[in-house]
Length: 461
Image 1 (cartoon, rainbow, N blue to C red):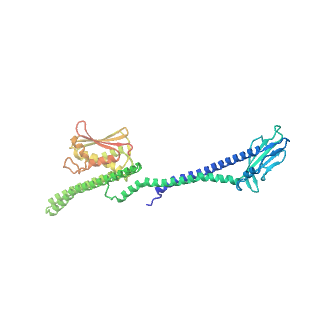
Image 2: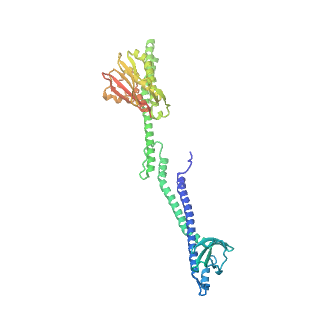
Image 3: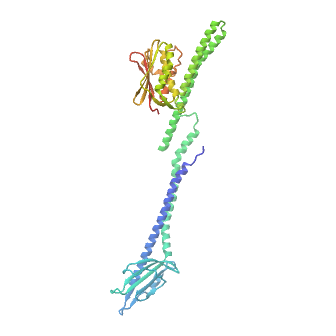
């Protein structure tokens, strides 16, 4: 299956795109700052020039306004062609004292003295940044000096561009350096994943040993730990299947060999009675083989690896136990036993596999009938304890010694070699109970006998 996206590409995009956005935002902010600084510097220069020009005007003794403005000062103010400074000095009322350019009349009306008025002036030569300042000539307030200065916007733009380059070039270099560092960092960060990929590619399918990564970040260790858990579960499942196959082959070999021997002897019999006896033994051996195969199939279905595929439905334990007890009564009567059911619960619903739960309780009842003497008593009891249902199968037989109780749940273990059992009944009971989140315990009856106690939660996991 082809991957939908690359983790490396995703990391690069998520790290570089925000950097690019921040760089563009920084560039825009730098442009605003550069324009503001250029405007402030231009306005300050215009105001200083206007103040300097105003100081060159004085009133003579005859009351006339005179301008002391030598040619050298005019040449100094003229500046370069791209950054030419225009000025106009006039009196109100009166006329123009000095001027070196054309000014429009868009300036606002005369404000209070010495309050600068900045505005944009458009002339045939281009757009200018202009300043108009009024200064009082005498104390009466009837005569005013007006100083107007203007500078072409081209100079201000050049200053703004210089500031922008001064700020933008280091930012661009920083973006490039950060992008390279991010790329190198992502490659180094993903290097342990590439190492794990090589280990997986070179690992043989039969090798289920855990992975060992000593020099790896925490996230890769977590991934490795999850893989090791999966390998451990798989190894246990494979080992369980191998053990099951070996046990099944060993257990089936004996009855099949006996069945073959009995058929060979039956073929040699010459009397009807001898042939009938041999056929009865063949039937008994075939019946035992069928029982063993059925038990093996049930045990295989109750394995943890197959339980995930088994359907789970609502199962009423009370009805199931009552029905199974009623079905087993004829067999108990034939064996000379008293089988009863004791439950006060009308309904005991859990979620589970109905076929496996039925097999669990069938094994318990059949074991009790099979292994206690004639004249015995078997009671199936259902109660509720907190958040669990408890099913107890109690008999008054000889019981099981404490040292053998834990071995009863081993596969193919039989305390007595008589009878037709195969030693799988209690192993099946334990597997099915655990698959439903429950447990099985063996307890001594109050007087004598055995109690098999099965605990099942109301809400199995």
